[in-house]
Image: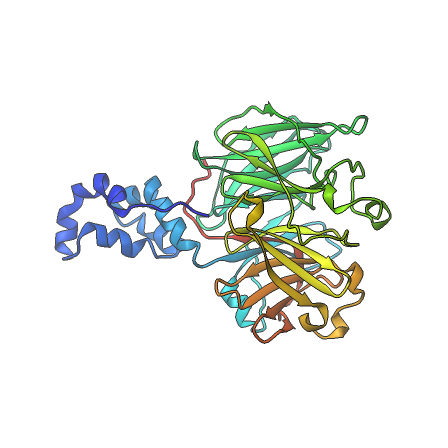
Length: 401
């Protein structure tokens, strides 16, 4: 959830020098700030060229935060797609959620092409990418803001290519941090390192108390960012690298846990799952952020998909059942092959709780589930979209340096 910003604090210093401009327009400077804070980034970037006043204002940290809060009301999904499946490079597109919910036939536009890059995370409009195209272990990391079309310098990484990365925002120090970790296969212990956006060196922090699932896979279980923390689904005393039913059939629900890393204190908290989660599913459960809350989704007996919401973050007693959806009602049976082995990923839930976007791994497609009507429909979109990769995205003015 984004912190609020006070307009008066923002406008107090830089705008007093421009009372003449405000008077000429017959508008108080505070009102000018409020009005332009609602504008899309592309128009604000044009405003920067109008005068020194606007250039200073739009770069002001308080205005950047103010705009970010407003921009969050128009959420997008960042999606990966490949026009040609035989090529190695992928493209990234950004589609507004409102456009997806209207479900008109859509041809996405290309916003960037990435050849041999990992997109390891998105936070407040910033993307963090890692270059893996070099043959040795020297590769690069950089930050990119698609809305402002700016990128940071390349940061040389000397870590082993086997490290897995996550990305988030430290609320107290107001800096973005990259987390890198690797699991030592010999004894199952982890090495965890942190890099701040302004630094060039990695620092070691405390190792994971419980290993996240898919600790070897760069595309799965990358961690979910929420309110200055990164969160992973994990299993106590489970040393397999993936989630195969032959392995998880031997475990109990008590072994499931969410590992939450506070980016400010760089310490961990273990969160228990809902008490209503009482049976080990064949398909890996998932954690996501919906309506600014941590949510937990899982299969129920091969017939339903259940979503729980943690109303108060990090408070075990605040779990409530948000939705219980019959697979038969998500979409027509032609799209659902085997319920008990189908992985669903919730991507977005509307503020009123009446529309849910779900990704289906079996056919790499997404559906809109109308909660009140208890029915689903496939999203009409062209090209090959990797829906299970989808990330939350908002336009922002956040700097890449």
